[in-house]
Length: 191
Image (cartoon, rainbow, N blue to C red; front, side, top):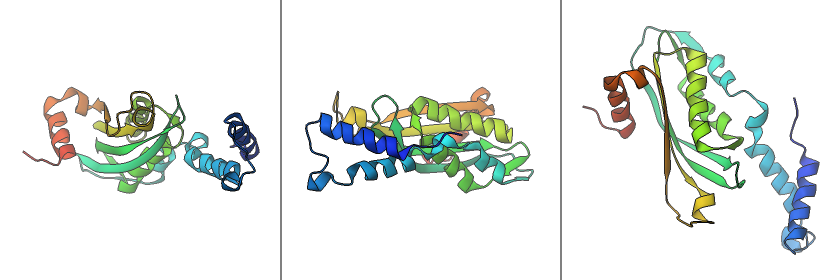
């Protein structure tokens, strides 16, 4: 499996610094190529691993068939169009058929898919599809809310604007009552 090539990143960053008309040996910029290579290595660590392995790492047989939801999972990702961060919260819920996974595994699943060049729409679908495939639950609901810095600090320049995406599978998609219950849990209300 290919790994991140830190040397090439450092060389490319030096080129960018020079292309901007700056001196990569200027006091404030010394070490910047190395720091950016470390940053990219960390931010893109999800490229070279399967986040679904987190779900496989722990599951148990249970007869619980109600909604399990972890809300407000913070995440950071990089927009693949501009290589500028987007960040926000993911809300992940599922209805077990006969297998459950650890609650921290849901957060790790989000993190694993977020740590690669991404689009929010794909991130949302990847988390939902992975849960659906690995656990074979009765239903899945994933909602992601994020601020995209490519929209906040450039272009239209609308800081604070949030993009919301959702993905539903199984009963969360086909049963209006189940979907409504999941949404009320997501919003923190209970009827």
